[in-house]
Amino acid sequence: MKSDANPMCKAHAAPRCTAKSKRTGERCKGPAVKGWNVCRFHGARGPGKANPAYKHGMRTRKWQEMRKAINDLVRMEKEIEELISEYADKPA
Image (tube, rainbow, N blue to C red; front, side, top):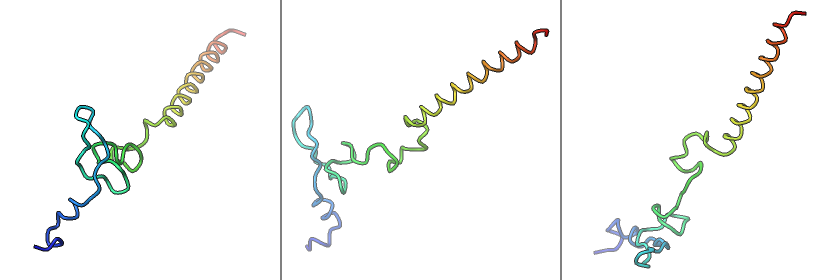
C-alpha cells in the first residue's frame, strides 16, 4: 500500500508536543500545533485576540482601568451636584 493513499500518514508524521508529564516524566504524544512546540492541550494558541474564547476584550486591564476612571468621574459629579443643591437651598 502506498504511503500517500492513507490520509493519516501526514497526521502521524507531524511533530510531537514537547510537554512532559509531572507524574510519569514521559513526553506528551499529541501532535504539536503548527508553529508551536506544544499541542492544543498544553498551551498552544492561548489567550488573546486569536483565541475564540476572547469575546470582546471588556475584561482586559485597559478596559478595567477605563471603567474605574469613569466611575470615579461619576462619583465626583454626584458630589458636585449635592454641593450645588445644598448651596442653592440656602437662603441668600
